[in-house]
Length: 292
Image 1 (spheres, rainbow, N blue to C red):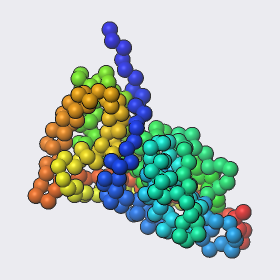
Image 2: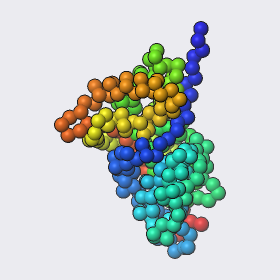
Image 3: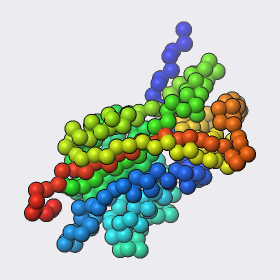
């Protein structure tokens, strides 16, 4: 009897250029999140201490750079566990910023990342947490890593019930691919908005949690497949990277499923995408007391 394959996710090799092919649509949710973040505690403080920001899952650094547009004097650190993404981020975005701040990037994994030794004004995460099982268990230590009045903000995909994801799960579980791809798919680790609200309020934060579905119009041939090659398909692409014939066979099967689920129209292909958002503000110091 064959041994049941492990369900552990396949470590993915990331391709920054593929990811950035749809940078406009991928960046929009982060801009919407950023627009709802209120003033940080250190913005108008009479101190020489710079605002400190951590970007968890910074990827290629393109959204990290947007933080410097909003807070020009801040010291911003991006963390990611992909050497490929970090190499692009450092090459394109690391160094002093025009407003007098600085951006740097470090290897770090959200599963065990701790905001030490110093505290942050803002910890932000863009399209990361769905890759991190039980990520809400890390919220207490991340909130602890904020200065009083600081902010924790994130957005994460919430479209795991969409055809793009259910069809992939069925294909990976099919007899042809089960042995090789049982663990090679994105995990639906996200919670519902009400669950995030409860977690954050339990941590004595004031919280704003919401969801949005973007009706994305994608151009070109097989654009949904092209989109997914940058994110959701990375574990499968990595698992089949050493077998080009099997990889092409798998992609051909998936391509046909996606074409049926997302037919191309006269103006392009509509790919609806649900996103979850949360902004939590840590309880500030009592009135009249400034943060250290």
